[in-house]
Each structure stands twice: as C-alpha cells, then as structure tokens.
Length: 237
Image (cartoon, rainbow, N blue to C red; front, side, top):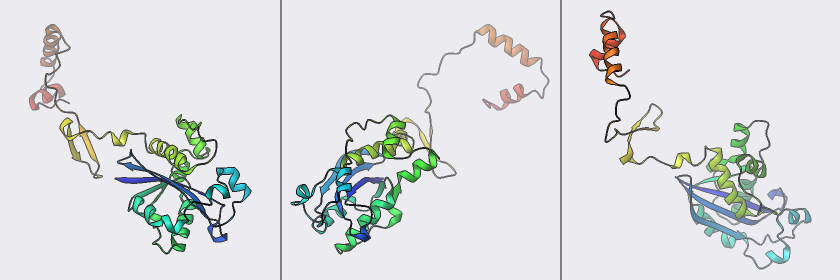
C-alpha cells in the first residue's frame, strides 16, 4: 500500500481570497514504512507575502521570487503522488489549497476521499486532548526540536512518525513472513498468524512421580469426568 504524507505552506488561510501555496513537502510510505523517496518544492505565489504568514514559515518575497509558479510544477507533483492515499494533518486545509492550485493550472483535482486526516484520527483517539502536530510529538516522544519554523518537508517527515504512532506504531508493517507461520483469513478478511510447531518439543515440566499421581487421581474419577473425556478424544483443552 502506497501512501504520501504531505504538508503545504501558504500565504494565508483562504485560497478563494487569493492565498496561494508557497511550499509542498511529501514523504512516501509503502506498507506504512518510509521508502526514502520525498518531494519538496518551493513555489512563487505570484503575490506578496503577508507578514503574519512570513512569521510562520519564514519564506520571504525575495526568497520565492526565482522559484517556479505552481503550473510549472503541477505535473511533477501529480506524478509523485500518483494514485496514493494522502496523509495530511488537518486535511481540509491542504486539500482546498491543492485543488484550488490544480484547478487554476488546468489540471485534474484530487478527490477528497483520498485524504487521510491525522487530526481527525488524533481527536478520535484522544478526545479533549490537544491534537496539534507539536502536541502529538510530545505525546509520542517524537523529537521535533528542529521545528523552529513551519517547513513542509520537515513537517511531513515528523507527521509520518506521528501517523505511524496513531495507527499503532510500526507493528502493522512487521508482517510475519509466510515461512514463519500460517496465515488464514478470519471472518473480517484480515490475516491471522499462528506460530509454527517447535522443531524440538519442549521437555516435560512435571516429574514422572507427578505424572503418575495425576493418572491415579484421574482413575478415581467417574466415567463421565472431563479429564477422561479429554484423554479419550485427544483434545488438549
């Protein structure tokens, strides 16, 4: 399963009011494990940077002046994400900006159902608790000391760690190989793992005297006793 953990930085809060994306960062996961493939792009927003936005991410008009505009990088971005699920913190924010930019560039928009919102997952798991990226880093003991300013790629890398913790750590990805055990379909369709037989059975943990005493005790029970039934059928209980 391919997923893209994604973050954007923008000039403000509302693309319909003229705010634009200035940075995209993305990290690729395969079966919930980072592959090392990333996407990172600064973007000229074709407008002035508000002071409030600059204080969040530190991207100035001068820095962005020679960067490509969105329509010039749209195809590379779409090729990177392909048809993967998009893991985003507060997905509604980034999705509305991405789709506004794609629409402006004459490219197909991204279906909303492709987004996995880690903010919604965190609020469901920890109702009433802070669910910002920084708060979740504190909860899971994830180092975010490099996050002095918001940055799309750094935030994506941090979010990838947070996402794995939100879905149960890396446990889903330590798939038990077919040679190590038997996988059978459960009623829900999910695989179940069964330990293989030991190559050498464990040595008995009771003494011969204890085994003889137990056998004598069972013989004193009635014919309908459970122990005799199990011994007859071979059911290990």
